[in-house]
Length: 317
Image 1: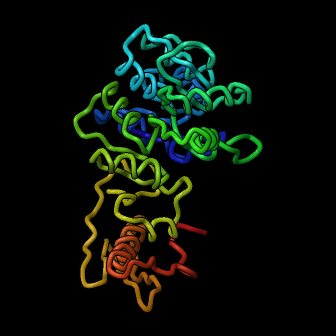
Image 2 (image 1 turned 45 degrees about the horizontal axis):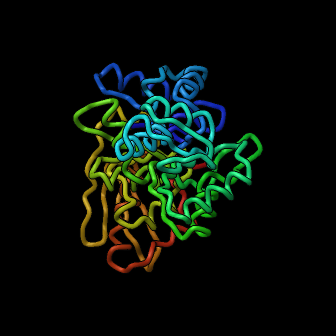
Image 3 (image 1 turned 90 degrees about the vertical axis):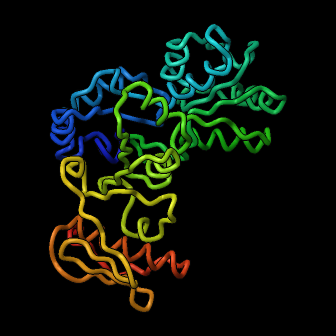
């Protein structure tokens, strides 16, 4: 289960080597799914975008938080039920695909569902907030606070969720990562015996996978860096760590950790006077594995993250 932005592509460009790694994984018999918290685009649109970037994909390979939200709704309300919708076309098509009827926020409905939509009107936001406060069941596609745009990082659907939550004093049922419905829907649709969640964010991709008891792989082509990893509490720690999706194709060595020291490959790491130190030579990924292994030993023992000031990984310029 591959997150998209920061894993398969960054901005408008595919991550170097991602298409080849995905194709190699498929050739070995691995099922591949592209998983996104973005509820605004239908799966076919996402698949077309991936294809344009050289990553082979069809609509059935893509699972969105809109589809997960639709599953949550239909399981409780039943097909044919009316759902007040605040969002974009991706959310509408997901509701219709499972037999639900999306209606305006003023119309009679069994629930409200919200998702990112650049054309959502403030008057509809106000009406939705009042209905939730009055008791209408509310499902939110995701709680992402930011979204990448051509003009920079902008407020995501999570900002709207926070607004509605504050006004109504109601917590929504959340479909997207790190909540369980999106990954459960992906497993239901795609199949496979040993699900692996692959992402670049600790607090959505990795936490979501771990909450379901799944193995997780963090790639370093996105937002999570050394400072994030060394301060990660147990629920946010990935099972595997790799520079990019090439990590799908190789064996990952075990980190030997104990007595304040972690070793992997030719690297040995420890925390001395609160500062993380790494010595040795070898594979870049093994450097990271040893470093975070030692940092986690220190964090668990002292409750304080190791200082990484001045420590530069071998693959970082």
